[in-house]
Image (cartoon, rainbow, N blue to C red; front, top):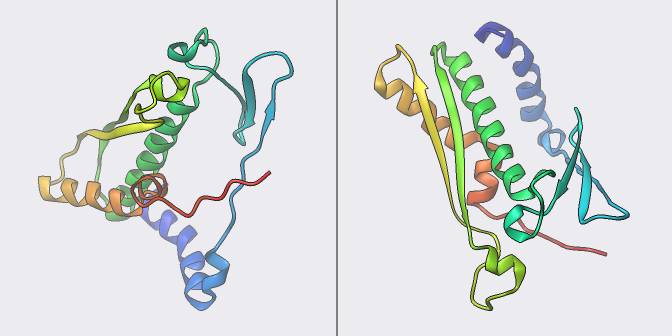
Length: 165
């Protein structure tokens, strides 16, 4: 997809959302099915069924996807797609990789140390990019990616969270 094709695809949406802001508010959903006989949950990703289970640091055997890894993968995917969209829109040729690293203290999730945090205590998003564009253009590309990446902004600005049963 080139810049013209991207603009052609997005412009009608932008126009519609300006005219009707409520049309831009969409509820995304995810659902998982609990396994009957193992500590696992199957999640439909839209393209494939992912079976998530315990990380080896919590007693898993490593054969199932870890939800913490999936969170980092969602961040990388969102940042990568956002970066490519911005680069395409601005005509900036760029290649490379996007990585995420996150620090966890598994004592927290295992409940083996009262003061240990549950969840990531730090996440690093790393861009290793190559481009012929001026450095300031690449810096602005990363800044814009940071601003518009849905997963990054969700992690940075915790949404209202409700748990129901």
